Image (cartoon, rainbow, N blue to C red):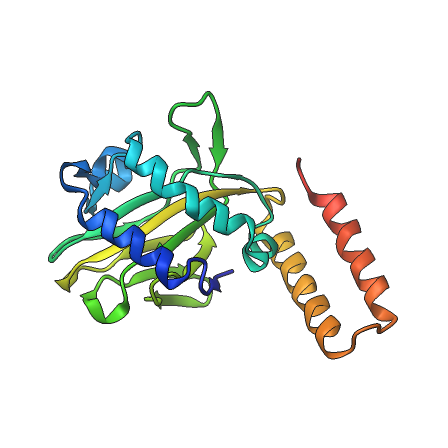
Length: 228
């Protein structure tokens, strides 16, 4: 399930993050520093060192925005969110086809996170660079994703995906992983679709008697499947 979540950050927040990243200088390191054996062979980009004060500072407003975003909460049902990281693709940089590692150690903490979902938050506007599409493959084929600055795409970490070569400009983004309360993707999709149906019914037919029953079904399924 691919979910486009618009305007996670507003224009002012996005601009502030971009300005800090452009001025980051020596804080940028080889992106292979956080890649596993498979990913390191096909990864050619730069990242802000994940243990740097700048990375932690810039991650905070993203985490705060996610906590307030109802669509993200509904789609991800987050139990844990890996601290957001930041990457840059200049001309000729790319990240070949790979699958994200299943478990990641949270830096500076004795904690691990199961990567059920991957997320990319776009920080560069689409017209500022060419190439650099996030290409995600699922059972329905390949999907090219290139979103407005401030928008986020959420997708299964188990999917084969890549970032195509940048041929003009630079692509800035934040990326992170989510451990969901509901591990199974099919169950998570069912809950998301049910929740969206409840939202539409609440909007179009407020007070409809079916809302109580549907909401009860949603929470009983979540109670059955959630790991907390």
